[in-house]
Amino acid sequence: MTVVSEPIPARKPNVVLQTLNRNRLSWVGVGLLALILLSAIFAPLLAPHDPLQQNILHRLEGPSPEFWLGTDSYGRDVLSRLLYGTRVSLLVGFLSVLIAMTVGSAIGIFAGYVGGMVDQVIMGLVDVMLSFPTLLLGLMVAAMLGASLENLIIAIAITETAPFVRIARAPTISAKRKEYVEAGRALGFSPLRIMGVHILPNILSDIVVVASLWMASAIRTEASLSFIGLGVQPPTPTWGGMIREGFENILSSWWLVVFPSLAILLTVLALNILGDALRDAIDPKLKGES
Amino acid sequence: MTRYIIRRLLAAIPTLLAMLTMVFVLVRLVPGDAAMAMLGDQASEVSLAALRAKLGLDQPIGVQYLAFLRDMLGGNFGVSMSSGRPVLEEVARVLPYTLELTASAILIGAIFGLPLGMVAALRRNAWPDYLSRILSLTGLSFPGFVSGILMLLAFAVYLRWFPVMSTASDNFVDHIRNLALPALNLGLIMTAYITRVTRSSMLNVLGEDYIRTARAKGVPPRRLILRHGLRNALIPVVTVVGLYFGTLIGNSVLVEMVFTRPGLGKLILGALQARDYTLLQGLMVIFASFVILVNILTDLIYAVVDPRVSYS
Image 1 (cartoon, rainbow over the protein chains, first blue to last red):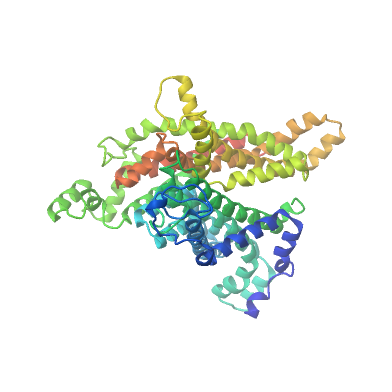
Image 2: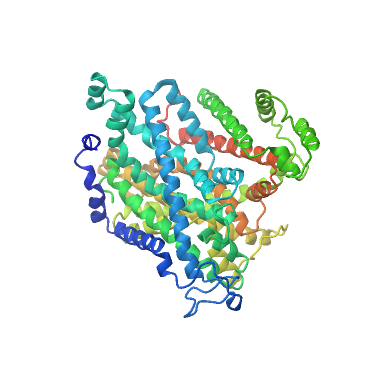
């Protein structure tokens, strides 16, 4: 591992803390995210009721001391379902971006390093992928694979791979001309070693920062697909699915749609705030703009 | 300029071919095949084979691919499996609704987003800047259906200013009332995008040497901002509006669902539910071609707005 960390310039490890200290709004993002993460981890402890327990006697009740956020049309506790729903959103968001980031970056580094025709063909394909909007592409893939947790993750990962190819390719092209890469090549290192050990660590921070913005997008897509009915299937609680079910009773029971909506909004907003601050910090063109 | 247009159009051909290939592969990745999807699991082998022959699914994959390319490039998108009407006719029927919605959204976005972004840039790091940045970040974070449902709840269910469900109507006032909430919903998301880009683009431009020179020469502030600043700052804004056009149509799927409005989105969802592969395939091709066309148009507008873009 020591070999991997060597080429990283001294500035980068502190970038996160520096940013957070300079941009006070980003602490709001960190705080929110921590809260959301904790509620996902400790959902079984925090939830006052069983999220799947139906209770016909308490159907469609508004917020009360017993059911803080009310109950749904099966008499299930909205707060408990909301807490458990956090798990699905975060899991899908994190895993799909992780897959998209790994596959996309590998392709991007490869395209940038090899160059020439290979690069042109890959980038042509990436342009085509980008000409389908995330949501529509996700919709098609999810519909074709069938609705399940794994397929949802795959569908979202596919839609978000193309941006990572772009993000990884550009810095690879500039890194390729640096002395340390030339030196590596002169020493007879294999291209795989140069790409993995010498180029990847140098462009990793750029990629990870963008990943936080794409995780926001992934969570938004997950919620949208669940709302359409192509997400994780009931009775598993998901925010988008809760809104879908609550939408049928929107005229009488506002709490069914408002609380999950707020949960989605706050999560995506927290990730966007953080990603935005981090991007400003690593993009030299925007320096001092915070 | 003519040469530039021709070159730009020629450059789109490989993109178009790659897109068609991708749609072809995607549709064939479906578990089972179109014949099975149409007839169901219980269908007999004989009827499956008959339908496969009719759809050309029994041909070698290369032959199918060439036939597909020939049909799509010739504008022959086939007949919808579920309604029996030509795909093109289905699309033409609902396209005006989606175009009306997206065009109003872009208009609303430009009306609110441009001034907000400019004010934010000019009052950088003061309260108008913070306010516009928080608002635009919030706008960016809303999935289209979430903001739509909240607006529906507030303005249609509680305040009763607008109808809960859109209905087709020839009456102009009713028509606008039906359009208002969905358009405002997408428009606010668009406002968020445009505010952001205008702000950062304006900040970049205001830091340029020619602005300092103009100011030193005594150009009045109003003229400086509008003529020298905004005109240059608009270039990235045009690009972004073009780029987000696809996102906007994607979002309109959800918005049409929330507001029960006819349109492309509803057609896509219907095709998915009915497993209507010809319609789905046609929709994907038409849709992606549309995005490619908008990208070309964006490039051309770019060239008009910015005389420095070389046409060669």
